[in-house]
Image 1 (cartoon, rainbow, N blue to C red):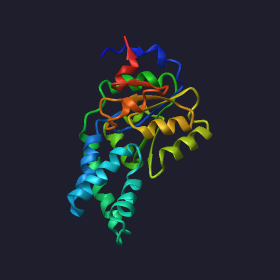
Image 2 (image 1 turned 90 degrees about the vertical axis):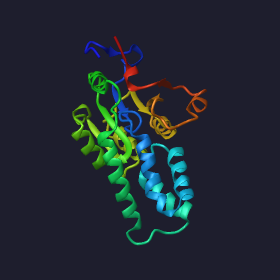
Image 3 (image 1 turned 60 degrees about the horizontal axis):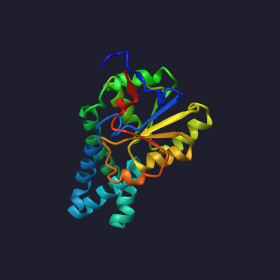
Length: 225
């Protein structure tokens, strides 16, 4: 992709950029779905399928919330000593391996270079913050971002904190692939761009039909020649 490509006109006025990770910057949604299934499989196929359904329905929410739901609402019991930690560790190992090897968004470096010319650029993800920072460093992407944020803080907590401290000036755009991404953007006054190619949100067209958002197939759609 030629370096002279620029931001499309409708995006040129933004002064802050917030990117989700899974399904937006990296093609990691399916891998994490498989990881949830595999970690829960020792409890039974039906149990694993139920966790996967919850995970997909609540895209963008941290693994801590999902595994808490796994015990409280699916297994309907408290985890035994060390059981939660063991599952989180298994999931983390599987997820990080996939984050290091999965496809990056097409022309990701060109996109991030273009948006960084207009204002600060952040990752705000449901993934583990330390894990994400290590992955982005190993993949040579960390230099594009003012900061990389993730769990155990929720996206709501992160946006509330960063908006209050002035780190995310208006006008700001949140770029995500899940219903929760849209909801949190709306709560904190960011415009929203839904990225569809790798999303697991199967009903997104109906959900967004009457909502004032923008849509794109991939983040490369931010650019024009």
